[in-house]
Structures are given as C-alpha cells and as structure tokens.
Length: 207
Image: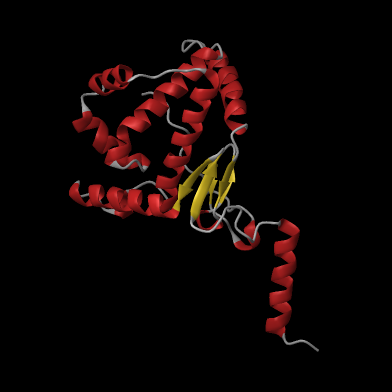
C-alpha cells in the first residue's frame, strides 16, 4: 500500500491535470503575454523596484496600500497598458501628447498626478502611459455611444468595449494568479482555483 504522502502527491497531480492550471500558461521568464506582446519578468521586476523606491521617497508604507500584492498591482497596470494600446491600434483611436498634457494640467500637474497614481500601482515613469490608457478608455466609451449623463448608455458602451478587450487574450504566469476578464488578476488558490475576494482594481478610467 502506498504511503499517505505519495497518495497525496498523486491526488494533487490528478487535480492539476483535471484543472489544466498547474503548469504556467506562459514561457519561462515571462510574467504575462497580452495579445502578441510579452511582459518579461525582468521588465516587471524593474517596474516593481521603481515603484517601491517611489513609495519610500513619498514616505508611504506598503501596509497602507489598498492592494493585496505590489507585484500583481504593477503587473495589472502593465497588462492594461498593453491591452488598451492594442485596442487603440485596432480601432484607430488616437491619443496624442497634447491630449496627455491637457489631462495632466487639468488634474493639477504631474506633481499631483504622479503621487496619486502610486495608489493604483503605477510607477512614476509610467504615469503618462496610464493617462494615455485612461483617455483611450474614455474615447472608447464615446466610440460605442456612451453619454456620460446617461448611465444606461455608459453601461452598454462598457459592455461593447470589454468585448473588444476580451478579443486581446491575456495569459499570466501562475506566480501572479489567474486572469479573469471581469476582475483582472485574481489570486490563485490551491489547485489553481481563483481565490474569492482577491480582485484587483478595474481598468483605468478618466477622472
């Protein structure tokens, strides 16, 4: 008769096969792939170091942040950047540097926007990309008929926009969880089942 440890290992292996979630869906050295774009572990690590240095400079303790994991929060932003950039290319939406500058100036300048973005997991060097993503989101809603004074039209436009985003596949290394089209990055629980209550922030939206 097999010992209990061996039997447990065999049971775990069977569960992995059944769920097809125990092996990484991306190649070694990759944190995620978005459409045809690869986000390497090296890039993610660099972004995380920059983000943590910015927190230290701003005298913000990591425990104060409303996020379950800094690596996942930063990776989530990188995924959204790529998704919305590819969406813009597919649909012909254009956000120029003047649009980005206007948004930042309206929000009080980079001195205010930059620190505010730390709460979203955005490193300082990526603030302009976050703004571009946010404006793409807003223009995307307008493209699909959203009227900001009519919540029903906004919801209908969001549904169409997210359908477009869903056509840009996202695969994530199991180190960072699993990808859910509605919740974003979700913590991976035992045997690959997404943990409850571990949802990440929604896509960027213009403030």
